[in-house]
Length: 118
Image 1: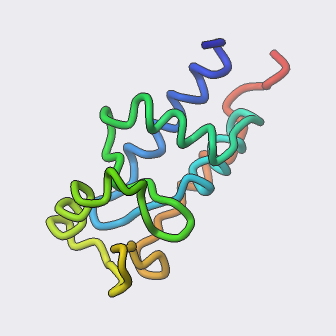
Image 2: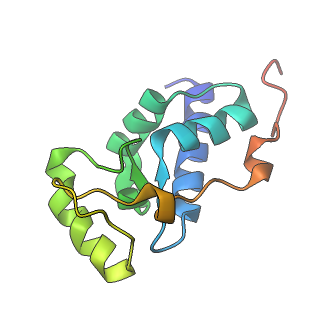
């Protein structure tokens, strides 16, 4: 991994770690926050970081744009959503009610942390 990727991974995990209990954010919102700080980031990058290192943070709080997680994670996530009181929809598969549960990264994440050309 390049140093740029390492910084990106650290920022993705930092954002994921800040999502409060009972709330979620999306891969896209995390990518937007990280991109604001580094000039780089895409929802797929966030997914790759979460797949590799997500066990270090509350991974169930970072969901797809439709409020779901990959199939293999849904059952484990549901237990956590119920324990935290995360708003859910009555749809199957279980989805987080994004209108009520979404948490957007603080605006300071969108400020450049360093000059990406440096």
